[in-house]
Amino acid sequence: LVEDDLKFTHKAAECWNQLVTRDLLNEHSGVPCVLRCGWQLGVEYCDDDPPELLPDVVRMSNHCSLMNRLMAQELLLGSEEHISATSDVFTHEIVAPNFCHFTMFPPISYDLSFALKVPSLIRPKGTMDDDLQHAVAVDRARRVEPQKIRVWLQSLVWLREVNCTLPCIHGWEQLQDGQEEFPVRVVCDLREPPAWIY
Image 1 (cartoon, rainbow, N blue to C red):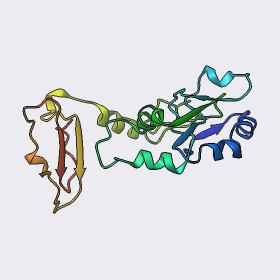
Image 2: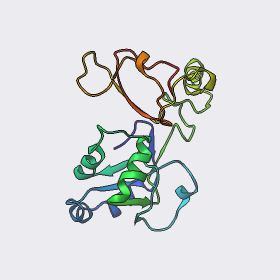
Image 3: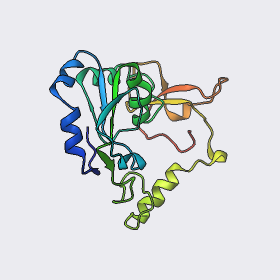
Image 4: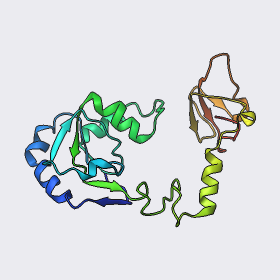
């Protein structure tokens, strides 16, 4: 899995060829397995030690990782349930530690937008080339104004359907805070969630 704003390091080919062997792939083909290849640019990128795969070392490697079909199935298993984490945390901290997982040292790639080498189209990082209007819109969308929030939820599942047969709330107007603190709700509505829900 490789994102589009990734840069491979000068040691990438050497590390990959030495560590990602047919023997390694065959040995772990029968169990869910993920291999983390890079993460946010940092001091570990100056590593001159010989390449190695460390088991049970967790890094947020969503921009460059390798997984087999069984790990992909584990990530999808239960995905119709509530996922209350970002994709990197869900993959690398919650699911992968239950199975076979390795982290490559030294890392062989890094994310250019996080390293401020290119502007991010998802979440502007403050580079000179950022789209100012987009940055303002993202900042506005991320801001939480408690006085405007009427319903606080732990988890929300939004079904963009008209005639839902599942047990759910039909329409955002029907959504109310119950007695429980930070409840889980399933809402069926064609319209996008209103700003008064958090």
